[in-house]
Structures are given as C-alpha cells and as structure tokens.
Image 1: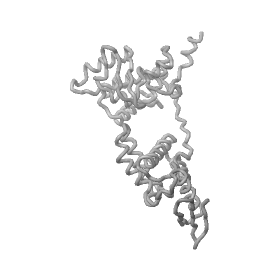
Image 2 (image 1 turned 90 degrees about the horizontal axis):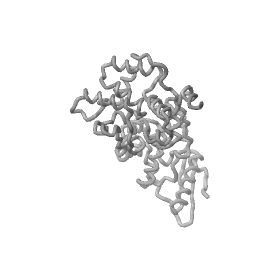
Image 3 (image 1 turned 60 degrees about the vertical axis):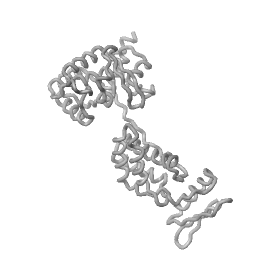
Image 4 (image 1 turned 120 degrees about the vertical axis):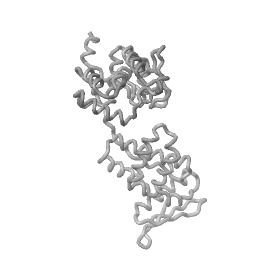
Length: 330
C-alpha cells in the first residue's frame, strides 16, 4: 500500500513492494500523488516489476500525436482526414499534458469542451484517435502506461439519423437542374447515386475499368468498410453510364473527374437551381437503399449491394414510404 504524506508543503507518494527498490515522488496536490501511486502499483501488478516511468514524465501527448501522425496515419486509407484531426488535437491544451499526468478527468474535460463547438460525431472520432494513439504507444512503442485513460471516458451519443427522402417532383427538378448546369456528367452521377445507393467516395473513385458492360455490374475493389463488392446496375443506371461514356474524354480513366470538395459546391448550386431544400448528397444513399427494399429485395440482398456489414446500420438507412407499403399489406 502506498504511503501519502505532506512534506515541506508538497505531497509525497511512496510505493514499497517486495523485490523492488522503493519509489517516491512529490506533487503539488494530494490527488496527483495518489494517482501516481495507483498507476505505479498497477504497473507492478501488470509487469511484475516497476518500469522506468521517467519517459512518461517528459513525454507529452502532443509528441505522441506527432509521432503517430508520421508513422501510423500515412498507412491508412483515410490518412488525409485523420491527419487533419490530429493537427486540431495538437493545437489543444490537452496536447501539452505529460503522459504521467494525463488523467481520466483530463479526457472528460476535453470531451465536454469539444462538444460545445463540434458535433458529437466529431468528438467521438477525436476520442477514437486519442485512444488508438495511446494503444499504439503501449503495445508497439513500449511506453510503460498502466492503462488507456481514454477508454475509461464515456463517449458522446451520436444521434444523426435522417429520414429525408425525395418527395413529389424533387428528383425531376434535380435532374432538370443538372441539365441547366455546366457539369456534363452531374446528371449521370445523380442517377447512379439514386439507383445504386453507393457512397460519395465510391462514386468519385469509380474507373471505367470497374464497369463491366457485359455483366452490367460495377466492381468496387476497396470500400469504406475495407472490403470490395459488386454492385449490379439497373437498366436506368446502365443507360446513363453508357450515354456519358460516349461523350466522355477517351483519355480519362476516371468516370467522374471531380474531387469531393468540388462535388459539395456543385451540389449546393444544384439545390438552389432546383429549389430543393434540406437535402444532403448522402440522403441519396438513403433513397437508393430504401428503393431497393421497395423493389422487393430482402435484407441480405440489399446489404450485398449497399455494402453494409451490420444489419443494424442498414436499418438506419432504410425509410420505406408508408403509402407504398399499404398495397403490399393487402
């Protein structure tokens, strides 16, 4: 059991265990002294000896984030987005905390502060990065951390389910808006999104070599969930792609030569031209998946097309029109 005592105005923690040299350290507060003693005892229980924790006293969380940014993030498919989030984390006051002083309360305070300015989903992603940074530091970099304090903190609840679907003549207005715009393939892109329920990144990353005209199938080699899949094309989607290919630049391998940022701007302009309100591009995925169900496909068939691994997540994207279900109920 650790001994905590006040000595010359500071709090001293001393840990004595059989078979190890006594360790002691002074702190400004009793709480910090008790935390250090608990962590050291936990490390002794875990490793069978007291590791040298001096590196934790000089290493900051920001330094861990910097190393992770250069060594781990570039190996991921979402490297650009993760590096941007790490840069945000490195500018926060939390990054200046040393690992020996990093506490569960620090992470909780960081979470609460971030929730004042960002969406819960953003805070969850940032906490996930912090947690993985510490896990890598413990498992791969050999830092003698007793535990991952981020895992002890409650994650914010994400409530971003949407039920927005195309109503009335919105689809036709959007298509007419595409025809009045300056992007020749925007109409085809819109039809493909509605007919297949593909993600934005999957559509923008599509190559002509991925499209099998004989089989009427798109082959995606790598998707968001880390696996590939084949997406069958409706006659409408296939005809739209075929028509665009006849007018596309023969030297281009990319079906839709556009970056995500450019699509976002084009989408906003399209909504204004079409007089469509409160519709996100991702809502077209909701629309596409729901239409697959309305055509009579079952849960497994739809998941094989949409790429959802968890049926629970697929249910979030499925918002069947009640009027269409009445006829099927009899």
